[in-house]
Length: 594
Ligand code: ARG
Image 1 (cartoon, helix red, strand yellow):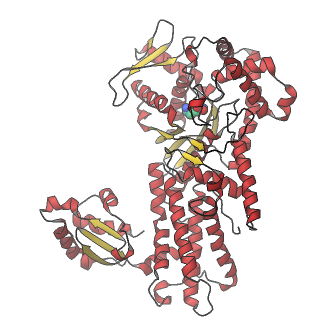
Image 2 (image 1 turned 90 degrees about the horizontal axis):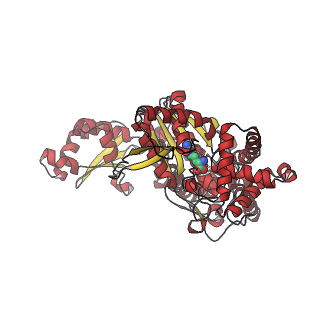
Image 3 (image 1 turned 120 degrees about the vertical axis):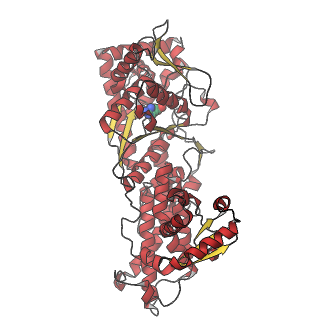
């Protein structure tokens, strides 16, 4: 929080830019060395002095100009160390309000986030959860920073999988089962088709080569050229559907209805909302228009089979890439629709940035999409970003699903909530099993950098110790119980002043907690800029650890020392506000009792 003051001082003295200083300033490894430190190596050449001499010169120049936020400065070798005024900082921290951490760096700029995007007709599986949870967290972070986030759920409502399902529906549909358990019935049909076709349920690729639960690519690239008789039947159905065949359309609509119910159940459980839910199929025509225009302007070519393609160089690659943007049977493919959707969203939302949160296996798809848009003259292509993420792996624990191949999201959620219930019962604690279970899943996903694989296990997710959600929720409840006990102590007088009331310096646990809380606003900004909720998750863990350290060493409620009690109570309350806000950004709820 007082880093700003350090930057202001150094800006004048070093003639370095604010952003540069922002990055250069370090946090010293221990409190004795100060709160912020500036390494002078970078100025040594310009000043023709040793880094130590530069440090001394700067110190001597600013020593007498220190603002009240900074207590003293010291030179240690090449470093200038800054010590903040702890009581002043403590005052700021005990005065925070429920909006703590919110800033206006977003200035209402629009950011579109394309996330979740499951495929209709197939059940949502564990691969989809990561996009859903990451997207929801980024929506919350951007909202907190006063951007205008637009969450788009781009349903895979068209594509070869739909052709397959229609074929299966006509052959094997059990109407009774559809009524009772629509999602299961769709899954059964799909699995049966795949068995006949001898392909894998959730991925075109050899599922045995991949970890379970891999994301199924929306693109049907390989099957495009397959002559398998079942695949051909599915393709034919898809073509009929696109031509407006009434029977096919009716089945397709029924599939959408049944499937949508299953998705909504999961979104409700996760408490995830979208600004807009739309299907890929809505962009076939728009996409084809774009392709036809490209053809007219010689930006794309037609090959001998009738398919339309473009050629381009991907960044950093010499070889020319060839990518089909329209199938030879003139139907729109995954990329055709994505071209249409991107152009449409740019028109509707005039976004400053659009992020696609999609599995890393689709990196090729997105770099092609962005390059082609650019090639076709759409300058907004520079505002598009693919945020890739890794796989969620289940150690030895595999949910036995009816297919033996898919880990169903709904099953994972239910099983986690069930286990949370058992854990709560075992510990004889209160607590809402749904909040604990859902939080545990979100947290184990979010504490990992998006691109890293997640090793999922119920033991780690639900443990009350270590870097887990129950540990954080429990720390919150612990703080709440102190506040509850102090209910009639009337500690929240806003004119309470640390400098005059607390007649001693802060002890080290208090200082550590004050400082950690004060870091929060900057952490949120970084998480937004880097699109990385893991920064907030791991911050929350460190914050809770520091609080627990404080809790064990610093008694809060006391009948002897009233002013100390008042200070500590307010500090505990500020900790609660801070942890609550940081968990809110991860989509995790807190409880006062646990
Ligand atoms: N439905 C696709 C899949 O499951 C993901 C869609 C991602 N978003 C997009 N605009 N392509 O593979």
